[in-house]
Length: 366
Image (cartoon, rainbow, N blue to C red; front, side):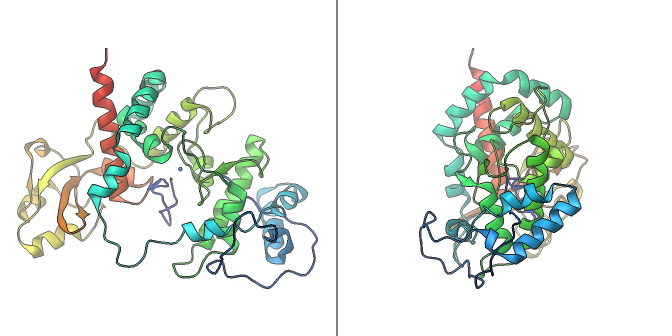
């Protein structure tokens, strides 16, 4: 979902990882008392859910949006007024409970598994010409593109059922308390959503996606859609829901613009330093490549021989495994590029390993 975690991902992502939202302006009655999105206990389909057309602050936002973007105020207001607060959106955006241990092995098992691998093999076989074209144009291997689409949506099987305009409106105007306020980010995405809907000739009420407003097989946030999505099949429209070609080209374009280096690996095997201080020094920049191969060696990290001659910078990436010992890799600039889709080393490794698993089977088939 690109750009959701960058802020957001995006990452993406995590980059996103990978939708549309809108709000509307209408003359309306006195707005109801502000609600707390974190204290909601009713079903999303409850008939008394208040639409955002009853909020003066939302209507002002819509008017300003229309003026900034040169859009028809009546068009913006009409659709923004029909957007509504969705309790589950406010619920799902919350982080996991404090103290929840990270577990790479468990995380991996959710994505590098038989259903996604089989679907990925079928996707690759059916759309190979577009994957080959994208690799030639952008330098991003088919394995990575296939991995992203598989992790994000299982190749279009799970693209989200929230009306995007509702998801973005909820997070723009009733962002839940209890975590860092990201309402400004989602207001930007809501504005980008209206721009996207206008350019594509879509009704802002139609698109559906994730609870965070990410859309299509690649789960693009609206800003990523506007900046990176491409009409790869040349039919005059960008369709991230039904055109695998557009999705493949858009994902590859996003990664290329995020720093992907042609013909460079994503990571090398590494044994981390035994000395705690050296290990901490290499881990300090997190996933940002910051050290040369020589600096890794000086700190006591032992890289596999495939890293010999690598001229780029590396990051020592730690993947926790709950109560078990962590896993480590040396991430390259291309590993970092995948985290721009979703700001998470766990996400990036899932993408990479799913793509590799699909690729092995695809190449072994006649």
